Image (cartoon, rainbow, N blue to C red; front, top):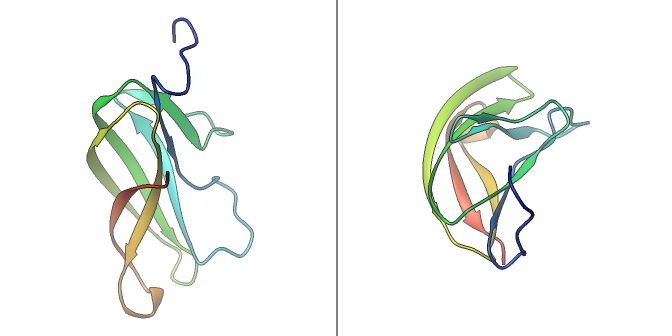
Length: 102
C-alpha cells in the first residue's frame, strides 16, 4: 500500500504457489503483519524491520498441513525465501525458516 518504493528500500519475501504440481513439500505464505495474501500471490514486498509471517507447510505424501508463525527481521534490498524443515522421509513439516537468497 502507498507509493511504490525502490527495490533497495523494501524486502521481498517469497513462498511457494498455492497450486504446485508434483512438489513434495510446499511452503505457502498466508499473511504478513495482518495483510492476507490473495490466492494468486506467493510473495510480498515489505518495509525493513521485524515482520510476523503466517505460513502453511504442506507435505504431499501424507497430505498434512502445519501452520507456523515466523517472526523475521528483514532488510531493504534483500530477497528472502521460505524453506520447510521436514522430518525423516518428508513425512511431516517440523518448522519453516526464512533464508536470504541474495
